[in-house]
Length: 320
Image 1 (tube, rainbow, N blue to C red):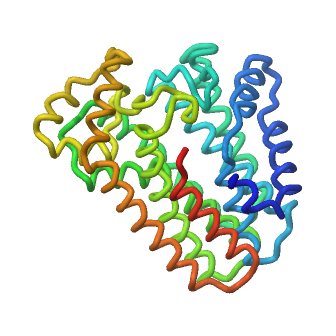
Image 2: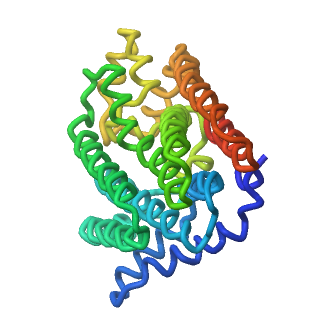
């Protein structure tokens, strides 16, 4: 089953947001236009806009109002990807050259900054001080997370708590904000939008852990980048933390660098998969997913509630 089927009743609204994203990145600079459009056309799951729209169904749903929030959240996500690719020196994203690979690091950084700025313009259309506070706090944490990710590269002396804090900032907080801001923009009750925030946070944690698992279990074609690339770039993820409990394997993992060959990485991946690291990572991801679904049970019954459950379950258990 494809993800889009789970929220097919939002098809027209998602298409509207897709067009608005293209409008949002338009500028007087052909270079900025080309780089930004390159990123949008690379595609993506559009998870954050979907959560914005579904959460808005718990209030007075008005796509003309809600779309500004959906566009703003996706632009923030896109900008963070551009910056991540510079930090990770990544050549591919979703199977296509990154902006830094297609142009250079300077163009990529300024393009990311521009996309961030455009996101702020869109959120100003929502006249709610709480919404602005939530978004600004989220962006602060997201920025701190990017700095911490740089500091933690190839730092093999990490623990589970540090990893969880990092993925919270990297992924979970923005998904949580997407759920909460969608509900706020639709005028949902405070109790509802706070629970949606919790739901989004737990889903985001499960989502990122699953992403980190897929870096070792999916194929290069499915990932759109080489398997094991996170580790090769120095990002110490949950499967790696678990695998390094094996001292013999740890001694091999800590030798990984950005210059490690494809054959060397394939061997490391094979060894990691031979341990219980992948299974244990799935168990933790499932715990976060269960927490998300339990929160969802406390929300009013509507069509969106079922879709939120289906989408959360899908992205928490996806194979690629």
